[in-house]
Amino acid sequence: MTLRFAMDLRPLRRRDFRLLYTAMTVTSFGSFITYVTIPYQISKMTNDPLQVGLIGICELVPLVFMGFIGGAYADYLDRRVLVRGAEVAQMALTGFLLANVAFGTPKLWLLYLVAAVSAAVDGMQRPALEGLTPRLVPPEEIPASSALASLRHQFSGLLGPTVAGLLIAAFGAGQGLAWVYGIDLATFAVSLVCLSLMKAVPPPEMADRPSLSSVATGLKYAWSRPELMGTYLVDINAMAFGMPQALFPFLADKLGGPAVLGLLYAALSGGSFLATVTSRWTTRVHRHGLAVVVAAGLWGVGIIVFGFAHSLWLALFGLLLAGAADMVSGIFRSTIWNQTIPDHLRGRLAGIEMLSYSAGPLLGGVRSGGMARWVGSAGSVVWGGVLCVVGTIALAAALPKFVAYDGRDGLARKEAEEAERAALVAASAQEVAA
Image 1 (cartoon, rainbow, N blue to C red):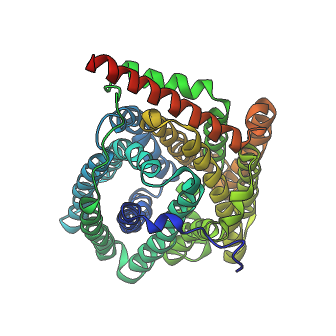
Image 2 (image 1 turned 60 degrees about the vertical axis):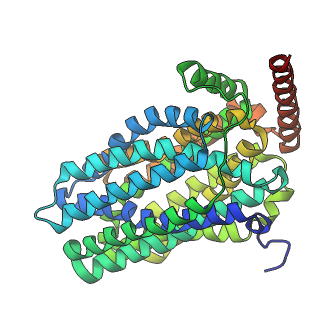
């Protein structure tokens, strides 16, 4: 691999970014193990794709509600404290999952309840986590930090599902699940230590108090920016139609069993990993909106290939292609967000971003599970991929300003907005002093 395509590692030279990166890498590994195991556990308890897909409904409502609240608080409080508090809460929830399989017969309702509460906690944590990065690295390193965050996610997505599948295959759905949840529980100790070693990240000066008015300010700002609305709508379309993960437990049975289940999840992350480690080229692309549209369309193509596959290797190839395309889309969407949104709005806009990239997969789980009852699991995957491609083309036609967006213009606008706010803060300080 030449330097031209190698990753840009400059953000890792910064101490607090390294600590945050280490914390989130370890905890993401454990979370991916649980992310695979809950749908598997429900599939074995119910043998119903729709009930697996209903996890998305349980998670969607608290995620939407808490995403706005979490975004408002991320602009008002120390973002590091919010991230650390959420880690403690997630650790407690993982303890409940472990107890559910270790003592007596597992309760289905508890799995849905933990999924819902975990989504609410994620809604509080994610905006603060997303808002930390622009405070820890300079603007010119934002694309590199986005790629590194993606690498962290894909590393965890590769290793976590693979470990989960191997444990379940080796120890069975009883003891194997206890091991899975136990490993996830242990990862939180590492993340909490790293987060505690980070320096405080105080809120911006003149931070808005959390309120309905402050939430509305963030929504109005997002609505006024076509490049932001484009990132939200294109990704929601791609995930709502093209996300097939609710069907993985059922398709894995046809392709080889529980060990294959981990490979299906890992293949998406594997494609994303390959795209990430060769991502230096993304710093030379300025038409970020067009890049997001093309990548979303390729995601749909990969899902179609996966749906038509009758062999494990072709299925993995389709998922690798889809994962790589999704990663490219994610890099450019994250770059648009972090290079253009002023810091005093970063938490609230991160809450909206979280809803855009989280609501789509959750809706996709319900869509794919429900459609599978009518056209089968493979048919549901294929039709979802087709609808994803058609929807992406329609959105590109309806959002010409998004397709034409140039990242250099967005960065210049952010600098002007930050300078204007700094002037307001200085003027207010002078009034108070007088």
